[in-house]
Amino acid sequence: MSEQDYDELGPDEGFVERLQNVDEELAEQRAESLRAGLGEYELDNEDLELLEAGEERADGYVQLPALPVLAVVGRPNVGKSALVNRIIGRREAVVEDTPGVTRDRVSYKAEWGNRRFTLVDTGGWEPDARGIDKSVAQQAEIAIDLADAVLFVVDANVGPTATDEHVVRLLRQTDRPVILVANKVDDAVQEPNAAVLWSLGLGEPMPVSALHGRGVADLLDLVMTKLPEVSKVAKEELGAPRRVAILGRPNVGKSSLLNRAAGEERVVVNDLAGTTRDPIDEQIELGGKVWRFVDTAGIRKRVHLQQGADFYASLRTTAALEKAEVAVVVLDVTEPIGVQDLRIIDLVLESGRALVLAFNKWDLLDDERRWQLEREVERDLAHVAWAPRVNISARTGRHLEKLVPALELALDSWDTRIPTGKFNAFIAELVAEFPHPLRGGKQPRILFGTQAQTQPPTFVLFTTGFLDPGYRRFIMRRLREVYGFEGSPIVVNMRVREKRQRRK
Image (cartoon, helix red, strand yellow):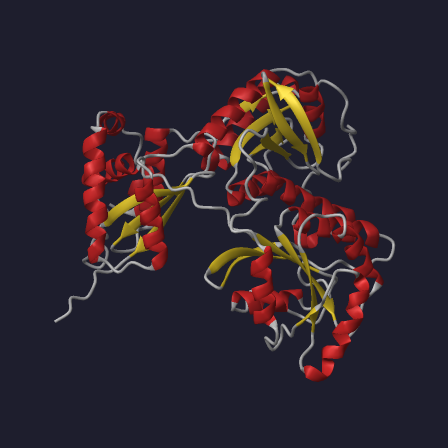
């Protein structure tokens, strides 16, 4: 079969029924046998950690710990991206002498002393004298809020500036550990330049040269003493209200939705697009449960094309999404589904958050527009057909009660885990009925599978070869047929492994 053939395969009720009748004890025994068979293949340390973690739980479910987060902040052109490249060991962050090259926050996985962590490179702030207080505070606040520790980078050869002082005032208000980095100390002759940074009041400055690597190892040794083993910010404590981000392009009714849910005017509502600049956290009781809603600033256009307040509003929208668990994307049914709507949905998919689509202003819909909308949904939203849809009117409150079941359904799917035995029985049934096509005379085999984590559900397949994208999409569709996953993205990763070479 070709990739297109797999894409065109429809639902299979018999397949679902057979899996529902699988003997769970027998499935677990088969999974253990398949797991043992992996001993014949070359596995790295990460593979073994994943498999050993799976054995510790009776259901074979693995919850990987949240990696601690280290944010790199500072004014433009102090060498933040160069330092990031030095820490991650590859030239990935854009480095240029022009201030402001990095405009968005970018995350990288890094490792030091056998400890893994997430490194966040933040943009420097444009030296706009009129808006500097707001710009510095917004960008730094986002980075600090989503980090376990902060590297504050200053150019040792320039010394502390007014912009640096703005950041310091913000850093003093946080409980996050802050390490002052005196960058561009390329040799011993320049080391005295770092001494003047004591005046910032953040303790001893660590002299480094991101360009040459000087002092970076000592800096990372110090960082390891400040970072927790498991992130305290990446995961919320159990029992806390589920966090909901309300997303959408400007003027689709996000603030009206929040006000209606809260039962009072908590957010400014205006026909002028872009009234909301900052996300507004609100704890709201809805459907007998407490939720934390975030009304975000509307996304106007691509971040790198934005300037001023709109640019920072977009950054804060992204931050709100990162802190949320489920996103409600609000669509205005009186207007065609546009590129901006699709880009916002893609942003949610990239973040791995659960998704609910809220079609707002439903009370203004006539029969002709309703027919057009259905065609648009079929054409433009087919890739998120699994997301619950609610048709509402934020202005009148019509059908707002349907939002809670949709949120609960999406979050239940986002939290779903499948025991290893059941997952491998699923794979065995699927491969028996629809084997992977031959490629170059060889047929990739799936040796073993496990669910690595939830939020979103992420599955790992150990294979003997690369699986075609169409076949992976087919696996995900069948997973949805059997287990639902309504409202949640699912991820299927591969680990291609070769057999061990027999010693002679």
